[in-house]
Length: 242
Image 1 (tube, rainbow, N blue to C red):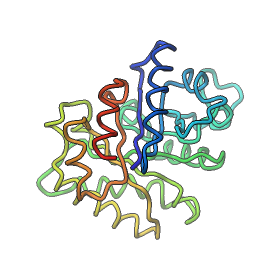
Image 2: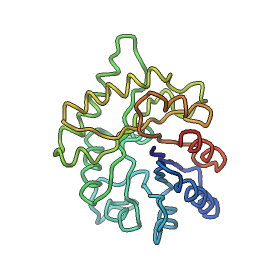
Image 3: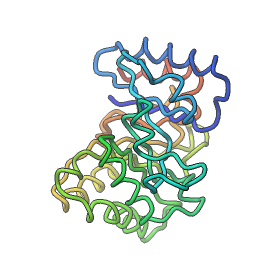
Image 4: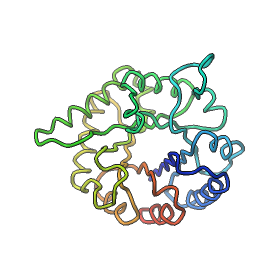
Protein backbone atom coordinates (compact mmCIF):
# COMPACT_ATOMS: atom_id res chain seq x y z
CA UNK A 1 0.00 0.00 0.00
CA UNK A 2 1.36 3.40 -1.06
CA UNK A 3 1.06 6.42 1.23
CA UNK A 4 1.97 9.80 -0.25
CA UNK A 5 2.17 12.48 2.43
CA UNK A 6 1.58 15.88 0.85
CA UNK A 7 2.80 18.33 3.48
CA UNK A 8 1.66 21.29 1.37
CA UNK A 9 2.82 24.46 3.20
CA UNK A 10 1.91 23.26 6.68
CA UNK A 11 5.49 22.58 7.79
CA UNK A 12 7.88 25.54 8.03
CA UNK A 13 10.18 24.37 10.83
CA UNK A 14 13.21 22.20 9.94
CA UNK A 15 12.90 20.54 13.35
CA UNK A 16 9.28 19.52 12.68
CA UNK A 17 10.24 18.28 9.21
CA UNK A 18 12.98 16.09 10.70
CA UNK A 19 10.59 14.69 13.32
CA UNK A 20 8.03 13.76 10.66
CA UNK A 21 10.74 12.13 8.55
CA UNK A 22 11.96 10.08 11.55
CA UNK A 23 8.43 8.84 12.15
CA UNK A 24 7.97 7.97 8.47
CA UNK A 25 11.19 5.93 8.49
CA UNK A 26 9.82 3.76 11.29
CA UNK A 27 6.56 3.21 9.41
CA UNK A 28 8.34 2.40 6.14
CA UNK A 29 9.74 -0.73 7.75
CA UNK A 30 6.27 -2.31 7.91
CA UNK A 31 5.54 -5.10 5.43
CA UNK A 32 3.73 -3.96 2.31
CA UNK A 33 4.08 -0.26 3.13
CA UNK A 34 5.60 2.25 0.71
CA UNK A 35 5.92 5.82 1.98
CA UNK A 36 6.55 8.85 -0.20
CA UNK A 37 6.91 12.23 1.50
CA UNK A 38 6.23 15.48 -0.33
CA UNK A 39 7.57 18.34 1.80
CA UNK A 40 8.15 21.85 0.48
CA UNK A 41 11.11 22.07 -1.91
CA UNK A 42 13.52 23.49 0.73
CA UNK A 43 12.72 20.61 3.07
CA UNK A 44 13.26 18.04 0.31
CA UNK A 45 16.71 19.59 -0.03
CA UNK A 46 17.17 19.25 3.72
CA UNK A 47 15.97 15.65 4.15
CA UNK A 48 16.56 13.77 0.89
CA UNK A 49 20.33 14.10 0.32
CA UNK A 50 22.05 11.05 1.76
CA UNK A 51 18.74 9.35 2.54
CA UNK A 52 19.28 5.58 2.83
CA UNK A 53 15.90 4.73 4.35
CA UNK A 54 12.92 3.13 2.62
CA UNK A 55 11.18 6.52 2.51
CA UNK A 56 11.12 8.23 -0.89
CA UNK A 57 10.70 11.93 -1.61
CA UNK A 58 8.44 13.83 -3.97
CA UNK A 59 8.24 17.45 -4.97
CA UNK A 60 4.78 19.01 -4.74
CA UNK A 61 5.21 20.56 -8.17
CA UNK A 62 7.89 21.44 -10.73
CA UNK A 63 8.33 24.02 -13.43
CA UNK A 64 7.44 23.23 -17.02
CA UNK A 65 10.57 25.08 -18.10
CA UNK A 66 14.03 23.62 -18.62
CA UNK A 67 15.84 26.35 -16.71
CA UNK A 68 17.60 29.57 -17.56
CA UNK A 69 16.19 33.02 -16.89
CA UNK A 70 13.19 31.73 -14.93
CA UNK A 71 13.21 33.37 -11.50
CA UNK A 72 11.61 31.25 -8.79
CA UNK A 73 11.16 28.12 -10.89
CA UNK A 74 12.22 24.63 -9.76
CA UNK A 75 13.08 22.46 -12.75
CA UNK A 76 12.82 18.68 -13.02
CA UNK A 77 16.61 18.42 -13.21
CA UNK A 78 16.97 20.39 -9.98
CA UNK A 79 14.33 18.24 -8.29
CA UNK A 80 16.11 15.03 -9.24
CA UNK A 81 19.44 16.51 -8.17
CA UNK A 82 18.30 17.04 -4.57
CA UNK A 83 16.88 13.53 -4.26
CA UNK A 84 13.24 13.71 -5.41
CA UNK A 85 12.09 10.61 -7.26
CA UNK A 86 8.40 11.53 -7.55
CA UNK A 87 6.53 14.73 -8.44
CA UNK A 88 2.90 15.55 -7.62
CA UNK A 89 1.37 17.12 -10.73
CA UNK A 90 -2.05 18.53 -11.52
CA UNK A 91 -3.11 18.87 -7.89
CA UNK A 92 -6.45 20.65 -7.63
CA UNK A 93 -4.81 23.51 -5.73
CA UNK A 94 -2.42 24.05 -8.64
CA UNK A 95 -5.21 23.73 -11.21
CA UNK A 96 -7.18 26.34 -9.24
CA UNK A 97 -4.25 28.73 -9.79
CA UNK A 98 -4.71 28.39 -13.53
CA UNK A 99 -2.67 25.36 -14.55
CA UNK A 100 -4.10 23.97 -17.77
CA UNK A 101 -4.03 20.39 -19.01
CA UNK A 102 -1.37 21.48 -21.51
CA UNK A 103 0.91 22.79 -18.75
CA UNK A 104 0.40 19.62 -16.70
CA UNK A 105 1.22 17.45 -19.70
CA UNK A 106 4.44 19.41 -20.23
CA UNK A 107 5.39 18.89 -16.58
CA UNK A 108 4.68 15.16 -16.86
CA UNK A 109 7.04 14.99 -19.83
CA UNK A 110 9.80 16.82 -17.93
CA UNK A 111 9.33 14.56 -14.92
CA UNK A 112 9.58 11.38 -16.97
CA UNK A 113 12.55 12.68 -18.96
CA UNK A 114 14.51 13.11 -15.73
CA UNK A 115 13.81 9.64 -14.38
CA UNK A 116 11.14 10.58 -11.87
CA UNK A 117 7.60 9.26 -11.42
CA UNK A 118 4.64 11.63 -11.90
CA UNK A 119 1.80 11.39 -9.39
CA UNK A 120 -0.96 12.72 -11.64
CA UNK A 121 -3.92 14.19 -9.77
CA UNK A 122 -7.38 14.12 -11.34
CA UNK A 123 -10.80 14.84 -9.91
CA UNK A 124 -14.12 16.53 -10.47
CA UNK A 125 -15.27 19.71 -8.74
CA UNK A 126 -18.77 18.37 -8.16
CA UNK A 127 -20.99 15.46 -9.11
CA UNK A 128 -24.03 15.94 -11.31
CA UNK A 129 -27.04 13.66 -11.69
CA UNK A 130 -26.26 13.12 -15.40
CA UNK A 131 -22.76 11.81 -14.56
CA UNK A 132 -21.07 14.38 -16.78
CA UNK A 133 -18.24 14.39 -14.24
CA UNK A 134 -17.15 11.04 -15.70
CA UNK A 135 -16.40 12.74 -19.02
CA UNK A 136 -14.43 15.38 -17.11
CA UNK A 137 -12.27 12.65 -15.56
CA UNK A 138 -11.83 11.00 -18.96
CA UNK A 139 -10.71 14.32 -20.48
CA UNK A 140 -8.14 14.93 -17.73
CA UNK A 141 -6.63 11.49 -18.31
CA UNK A 142 -6.70 11.82 -22.09
CA UNK A 143 -4.89 15.18 -21.94
CA UNK A 144 -1.84 13.38 -20.53
CA UNK A 145 -1.99 9.75 -21.63
CA UNK A 146 -2.82 10.38 -25.30
CA UNK A 147 0.50 12.18 -25.82
CA UNK A 148 2.77 9.58 -24.22
CA UNK A 149 4.31 6.33 -25.38
CA UNK A 150 3.13 3.04 -23.82
CA UNK A 151 6.43 2.84 -21.93
CA UNK A 152 5.87 6.31 -20.45
CA UNK A 153 2.22 5.77 -19.57
CA UNK A 154 2.84 2.81 -17.30
CA UNK A 155 5.23 4.85 -15.13
CA UNK A 156 2.52 7.27 -13.97
CA UNK A 157 0.75 6.95 -10.63
CA UNK A 158 -2.80 8.29 -10.86
CA UNK A 159 -4.28 10.01 -7.79
CA UNK A 160 -8.04 10.45 -7.78
CA UNK A 161 -8.90 13.42 -5.57
CA UNK A 162 -12.47 14.69 -5.95
CA UNK A 163 -12.26 18.41 -5.20
CA UNK A 164 -15.52 18.40 -3.23
CA UNK A 165 -13.95 16.01 -0.67
CA UNK A 166 -10.58 17.69 -0.09
CA UNK A 167 -9.75 19.23 3.26
CA UNK A 168 -13.00 18.27 4.95
CA UNK A 169 -13.95 15.88 7.75
CA UNK A 170 -13.84 12.11 7.28
CA UNK A 171 -17.64 12.10 7.06
CA UNK A 172 -17.35 14.19 3.88
CA UNK A 173 -15.08 11.69 2.10
CA UNK A 174 -16.39 9.66 -0.80
CA UNK A 175 -18.53 6.63 0.08
CA UNK A 176 -16.60 3.34 -0.26
CA UNK A 177 -19.03 2.02 -2.89
CA UNK A 178 -18.73 5.17 -4.97
CA UNK A 179 -14.94 4.99 -4.69
CA UNK A 180 -14.92 1.39 -5.92
CA UNK A 181 -17.03 2.39 -8.93
CA UNK A 182 -14.76 5.34 -9.67
CA UNK A 183 -11.59 3.25 -9.52
CA UNK A 184 -13.17 0.77 -11.93
CA UNK A 185 -14.07 3.61 -14.29
CA UNK A 186 -10.56 5.06 -14.18
CA UNK A 187 -9.08 1.63 -14.91
CA UNK A 188 -11.47 1.29 -17.85
CA UNK A 189 -10.33 4.65 -19.28
CA UNK A 190 -6.68 3.71 -18.77
CA UNK A 191 -7.40 0.49 -20.64
CA UNK A 192 -8.09 2.60 -23.74
CA UNK A 193 -4.38 3.47 -23.64
CA UNK A 194 -3.29 -0.10 -22.89
CA UNK A 195 -2.02 1.10 -19.53
CA UNK A 196 -2.49 -0.42 -16.08
CA UNK A 197 -1.44 2.07 -13.43
CA UNK A 198 -1.40 2.27 -9.67
CA UNK A 199 -4.29 4.43 -8.44
CA UNK A 200 -4.42 6.36 -5.19
CA UNK A 201 -7.30 8.13 -3.49
CA UNK A 202 -7.09 11.53 -1.78
CA UNK A 203 -9.79 13.52 -0.05
CA UNK A 204 -10.50 13.68 3.70
CA UNK A 205 -8.58 10.48 4.45
CA UNK A 206 -8.20 9.97 8.20
CA UNK A 207 -7.39 7.10 10.59
CA UNK A 208 -11.10 6.60 11.20
CA UNK A 209 -12.08 5.97 7.58
CA UNK A 210 -8.98 4.73 5.78
CA UNK A 211 -9.65 1.03 6.42
CA UNK A 212 -13.20 1.37 5.10
CA UNK A 213 -11.98 3.24 1.99
CA UNK A 214 -9.29 0.64 1.31
CA UNK A 215 -11.52 -2.42 1.70
CA UNK A 216 -12.80 -3.61 -1.66
CA UNK A 217 -12.28 -0.30 -3.46
CA UNK A 218 -9.32 -1.44 -5.56
CA UNK A 219 -7.11 1.49 -4.56
CA UNK A 220 -3.36 0.95 -4.35
CA UNK A 221 -2.86 3.61 -1.71
CA UNK A 222 -3.66 7.12 -0.55
CA UNK A 223 -2.61 10.72 -1.18
CA UNK A 224 -2.85 12.30 2.26
CA UNK A 225 -2.81 16.00 3.02
CA UNK A 226 -3.27 17.51 6.48
CA UNK A 227 -3.27 14.14 8.30
CA UNK A 228 0.26 13.49 7.02
CA UNK A 229 1.78 16.34 9.05
CA UNK A 230 0.64 14.99 12.40
CA UNK A 231 2.82 12.11 13.64
CA UNK A 232 0.02 10.49 15.61
CA UNK A 233 -2.57 10.70 12.83
CA UNK A 234 -0.23 9.55 10.06
CA UNK A 235 1.05 6.64 12.16
CA UNK A 236 -2.49 5.51 13.01
CA UNK A 237 -3.56 5.86 9.39
CA UNK A 238 -0.71 3.71 8.03
CA UNK A 239 -1.12 1.08 10.74
CA UNK A 240 -4.85 0.83 10.10
CA UNK A 241 -4.34 -0.68 6.66
CA UNK A 242 -0.94 -2.37 6.92
